[in-house]
Length: 316
Image (cartoon, rainbow, N blue to C red; front, side, top):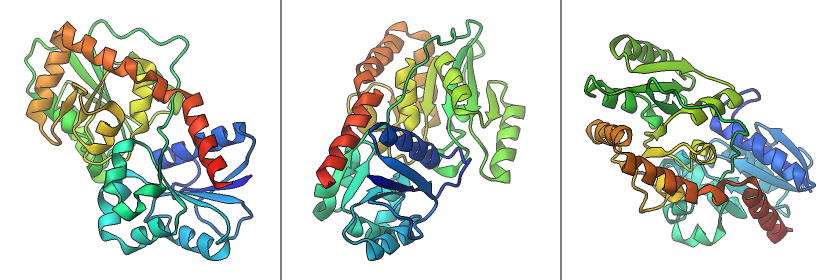
């Protein structure tokens, strides 16, 4: 099939939507399809369109439906779609109605959809691969990775705030990877480094560099207020790096209801206790490792490829 993937993130962007679109393009080409990427639908010839983001791709969804009503339309829902926009934005709601299938990145997202539309939902968890020669974790410090662009929805400084109150004996050091999407966020990161010796913001890295730093870390902290199903969770699982995450639907859908590494959204005190426990309590840390290891089959590329193959066959 000729497949068009529409994502509002521009070429060369390292935003999550663009990275996801590029990975899906490669995966779908492996399945024998011809795939093109675009920021919008402008009458490109295609047999199927996959749009990322209900609100931001709404015009493309509407134009495609009007021009190719006989061709299937898949809509991938982000965290801001599922947990914010589809409740308040009419154009986002219209995108849901026009799509033939709704692609979710984790199963807990289904219940966020209006009940009449839940039958359209298909869950395709994002895949990741580990490194053949992963780096050895640093012995001098207990390194914790925070991976994500500096945006309010990510609550990006929650781990740094939690680390401020750690006892002097703690070896915890935080490395934050991600671009500042505003001048104010960049300044806040610099201010945090000035006042907090445990925190280092290193900015945006390439995917391969990020993968190595994540594999070297002892923990990943995902402190987001909203997530549709963060790919960095899959990357951490593939790397063998345990995760501590805010208790939000998007992370519960990936890690499971009974995962032991959750803290309440925005609760720096609870996060601080959990970071200390991971550093000091070997049994707790080993439990996090075991729980993440059990998730490895779900992040294998062949699993994601099979789910996409099944979905396309369903629409053919």
